[in-house]
Length: 250
Image 1: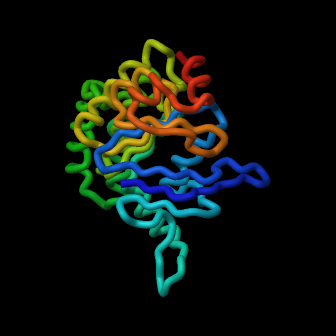
Image 2: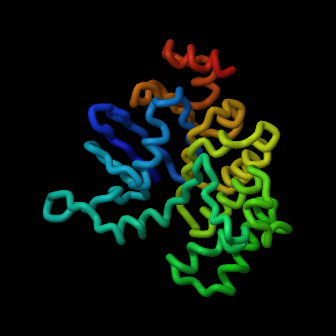
């Protein structure tokens, strides 16, 4: 579903990604671990072309991200084409980014109507079902200010699912939450994993990674230091840098 080959990304003179290689199979859950500033979030933003890579190649579902190959050369996609492909990838950020003047139901149903031109009655029925799925069926008419942080993040997940994505990206989805609210968001993510959704998750929740991930990748300094099954990477890491990080986090 995702393939990264020698992906580089710099902001000015600061190299953030320095040759990232990663494959994510369809239906797989991969958790990216690592210290702040290691390039995890930047890599996610490159996967859906919110950031343009400087060199290397990225594919999602067999198609190049941001480019097409024509006459043996790479041709950058127009913004409309980029937006269409991006709509097939769900992304959940640290901040919830809900529209404050719209109810939970309206937040979830907005994109399918505007972007996919789906019929409003059908979209609202499906949006209600998605809110039920994340445990918020009774709060469909509530505004973001009337919801807890955990509830808002669950609305954000339902909003991403409303576009029927083939891939879900999570960028530290629990980092802005009070500790007591983290569990309700992780439970929704567990349900998604059980349903077979392909997921790439940037997280510091080691317990979640151990329980749910098929594979864990540890990033530091813009590269993937090591990756493998969580039982191997978290219990018997090969790299000294990985061992140091995990011992501090645990």
